Image (cartoon, rainbow, N blue to C red; front, side):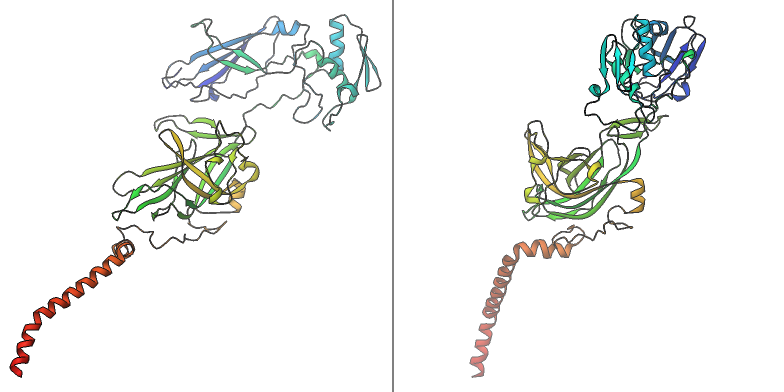
Length: 487
């Protein structure tokens, strides 16, 4: 409904003269809102029988737009013989999260069913046997191999419920109802997932309603320690003709713009990089739904924060640092924290076979939310002429902590204080790893002298010999004359 292709939906529930407008609780910038709302109204059937649920689009300026609505005939549900006033659950629990919420017990519902369909009333014999419509039913036949939860109710009530579940009655379920707008008749404007329970007052008070409010995400922190890299593509060629790369690693969580990167390992001649660098990635996560919650403004001038629910993915990239041109991308690794490839124990065993693809179905995976801490080698991949190639290998430690655990075990970014859990020492890089522009004398020593040492020595020896010969030729005539005159 908005110019950005999204909407700011909220609900309006009306029944007869009663109207509930939930405008203050609109959900900004979404096409899949999660309302999680329960509305309780008093209905006088059949005087007020049509329950209308409208989804509106909130506008800061101007009149709110109607997205669509659905109408439910409560009288039809109340009078049907299929027990549509309250969906029938699969189990009878007197406590717990699945507590029975109907006004009537299963035995009362079964007796009402018999009365409506002109059957004889069910005859209960003890707690585990009932004669219904000429047939015998035993509780043991329904609960073979079942574990009886302490939340479950008496055996006779459970038996009555088992019998009811075999009858043509409406089971407990979530309805999916289409939304329509008179401006575009016959065209769905979306769908609403919901259900309606009807509780006649002469049946007694209903049970507690289910809590369907949206789950609140928990705060987590992902700590990634980049130890080393190996077999990284050598992208550059030095002035002396050596293949090399100035390696650094960049990382972020998918959907979160904040990125972190290590320092640079200069002049890697064999694709090896040493870092001992810690990344810290705080994020919101809902374990029950296995999704990460990202809340941010779409634009700088946006008034509302948009919420997205996406998989928890860690993205790591290997780059080659350049001084006078844009840095070169070398390879990338994506890790779904719920189903990530198991790391290799050493660099030699690390390869593209660890990356799950459509044609590789036997990749061993691990969930960081279960194991909490994983250490090893993962491959970074790149594409060359449409084919996937190995761009490098990353040795890392991934640790997942809750907010409380992160406060109990503090750690700083990179190698900053508090440098603990674990302590990261400066990497032991080779003497050739330095920026040439910052150390000209080291450049002469480790670049020019190391590569052309014997050539320079031969040149110096030749220069000394030539100098001696020239000096001899220059001084020999004078010395000869002096000897003759002196004699």
